[in-house]
Image (cartoon, rainbow, N blue to C red; front, side, top):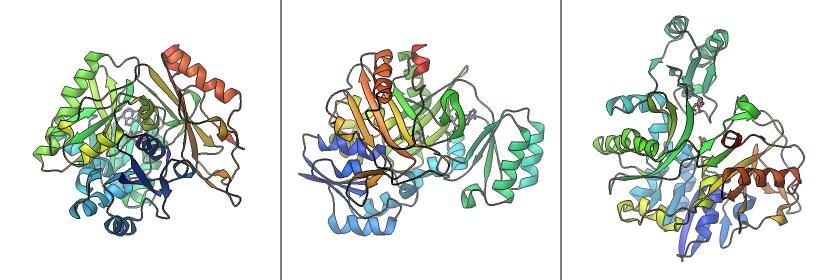
Length: 431
Ligand code: AMP
Ligand code: GLY
């Protein structure tokens, strides 16, 4: 038996934990903090430790010395949790603080891409309000403005409205909209094209980068890509436009140069490089990097993966990814819809009882992963976050899988007050 500590408590961590619980290796799972779904996995325990309590997590891990630590979210990675644990000889899936700058500092990531000729949108970096406003006046729009640091997905504005753009600049640089994260901003060239998320296993020790299957996520709150940005409202895999030629181009033009750049700069990177790409008329360009598994992409990808996830994560963490047998994927597709609390990404209620959970056993082609869930006073599952569940359906093709996921939702198989979801996940694939 191996002991695996998973940091985080969202749908991503439930999906990873579910797959780990089925590993041939046999694992005991410890989640910090986990959710109601992870608590129900076999041989699993939720710990009373938050994903951002880096010191307490370090102490816990050094005391218990798990065989593998998997860090889900970006905040503890950027704060150096993986460095602390690796320095103490533990196997950790996730980069150290230096590698995590790919996500934690957009200006650092842009400079990295420039140093290594990785295609991305042109941009200018500003520290002062006046020159930034001046520069905005000279642009035609749409305007793309980003806070440099971590802002939980809220640090990006894309707008055709110059007044809104000016306000964002003033509030970030002049005010305190993003705190330290907004001390620098980037004003970027607007790119057009289709978006795709490429999550790649990256190991600078054995020097390989291996993409998972491509996925598309939906960042806006409402159908038709309307409303505010969220953490993600659904994802499907694979997008139909991802031809073998395009996959090859992404490997040659984006992934290999990213790996080589990390190696050239002496950065020990063992974890996921997530490249958010825009497929522009000139070819694939990086919109952003993340230093971790995407959420909700991971929930739509994991049920498609046939390889043993413990081996995948463990080989990467130990710097032996080059020795891993090729990844095996189930044929077919997946569609995943996020079930959110009404009001999300704004204020929303918590503690709403959930019913219908007994209809899901995550063994066939339908998967219910918990995200923001917890236990109420009577031990029953209640809502505890903005994104509450991910409902994933596998299918031979997108049309059936889509139909199946929305049939389950239409029949109210799972219910809580305020349940809210997008109806157009993967719709563009079947139109
Ligand atoms: P990010 O957090 O950097 O991924 O940005 C959030 C979303 O804003 C992306 O998924 C894109 O849809 C959009 N976006 C970001 N940068 C650009 C850009 N340079 N051109 C067009 N759209 C962008
Ligand atoms: N799905 C986007 C993210 O994980 O940041």
